[in-house]
Length: 169
Length: 273
Image (cartoon, each protein chain N blue to C red):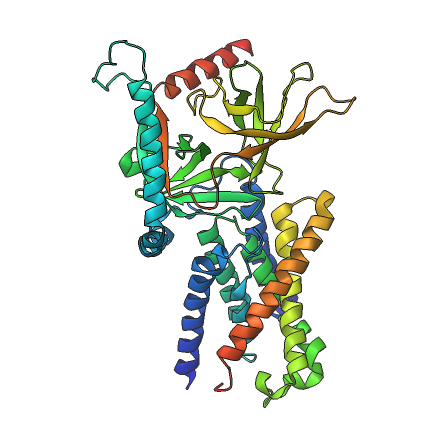
């Protein structure tokens, strides 16, 4: 059972990178909207696994996406930050009961899941576009990008997560 | 000692996070400058091969359009060739020509980021080096930045770090071409002085003071320009000739005299110090 969970996570890691760089990086809705679906890895990752490994994996995930899209290490910085902040975001969304042994993402309400995903994406996008544009003169541009691309990411991620349900875990 | 170990154990997640964040910030900030790290780009064995495999599949859908573009370009070159003034053909000996041209294919394109890089399927094994110019049949595309054995990344003109020497066609008014990251069809020309008269629709081509591109390669036409009273130079918006969203076939230009020019320039600037 444990090896099964490892296998699923490795498969997700590889598939999400490929889907991101080969499909979603080439979408270019309205010329600039490319949803970042690889954040789903952090949404789906088991809660009670070791935290240090999770942070390291998220860093590698971001770094791989960076590697493919020639974006220096911006994806890595944003992803490692939300990986570190994930327990706080979960506590905020699900209250204290996420620390219980029998807590499962599928047992929570739809609204809680969406808030969790949306918070991950908003924090990620804020860091990502701040680093990408790298100047505070363009605060409006950053906010515009966070809002429009964030909406696209949330919609696509919700669609993908309802397609590939996590009920088996 | 005990306390230090306890501290590290208690905050190990935070320390790991801070360490990894530090690494990524260093990578990011260091590569804002002109020379990026040599290994951290999409011109490597793994990403290059994945991109070129998927590109092999997706290019089939655009073959008709690509063929039409190539025939169009051939037609243009034929017209030039047939209408030449009667002058002897250039020697066929290619050992001492100034510009060499290599063909290439785009395997990864990008135009929605502030710093866009394009990956092509030719590398150092094909004779590519850093700072060679890359053009399409329509106009300028960018400059080779990093090469691996079989792949190379090209700094697109749609990159906020890009600076290309450009001029107004048939004049000697030079400026530098930059991009403000707002629109992928429009780039900006800076440093054209205010006494120059401009008209919307004027053509902009590459200038002669670059050792990367030959002179007079088309870039685009002036879309609009403005000049406020306090400025000594124009702000010019240029609409690009090449459609940056659909580039497939590219030409890489190598200036065989570039090394000599660079050496001479650096010696001159050393002498002045």
